[in-house]
Length: 182
Length: 180
Image (cartoon, rainbow over all chains, first blue to last red; front, side, top):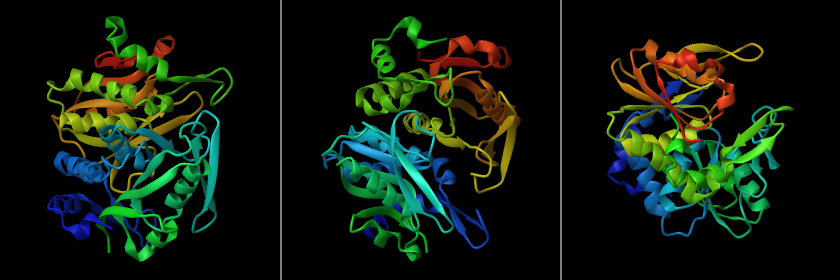
């Protein structure tokens, strides 16, 4: 599901503020740069508002954001809907006791961590990131939350790259995005 | 300047929501963990409100946040003030053309970077991070912004570690605000 297809009038302004940087971080990748969206206060506010309108009556008590760009979009959403914000981080960044979930990269593996005790069983959670590509990181994030008995209601991203089929990697969990990059 | 001296009634709850973790990342350091503050919806809301109340009539057009915990506090403040949010990042994270500022660590140096064109000369900026320790990172952030002609109005942090005041004179021409 995407706001792009719903054609909310705010989407156009959001889409045009995202900058594409070719060949970053390596040849062949067209990098979707959201920093230019953050320079446009109306576009940034509209981005947050679109998510808040969708989730404010869904009894969400946890917004989990993936380091580092998920830290930019997650907290404003959490504050507006009255939920906790839980950072999901690369290894060795969180100072307290953590649980971990490994995931595959193109070459090798990485790991995502969450503080023990941040989330209680039965809580209803969103996972937020700027972009979904292959879905590997979002999948690991969902597993972390499910490890502690939380229910992941939806994954929310500003941008989806549909060709990378990340949506299929979410084990049937709903995904909501604002724009698609083709 | 610290809000604690005036003891706004919201400060006590913010302060008690922060968790101290001994010996992280290494022995002898008492790490100030703000993740527990983010779990307390009222305390997190109050933290943002205290900053917004202070800056709302100061014509701030840029809020610059230091990676990564500055990304948590900066954007809500920017949104409330109608200002741009500019991420200041470790090397090789930003995809476009960048300018860099090096700074000293206990052993060696590090760098922070900002996108070229993110800010314009004459803009009025805040720099946000969760905590100020020696001030090295904040000092580098101020220099980055000043190099492109921006006026840094103030640095704002949730936590100050006063016993590490060593580098404060370097940034004495910019005001510091911290809540704790």
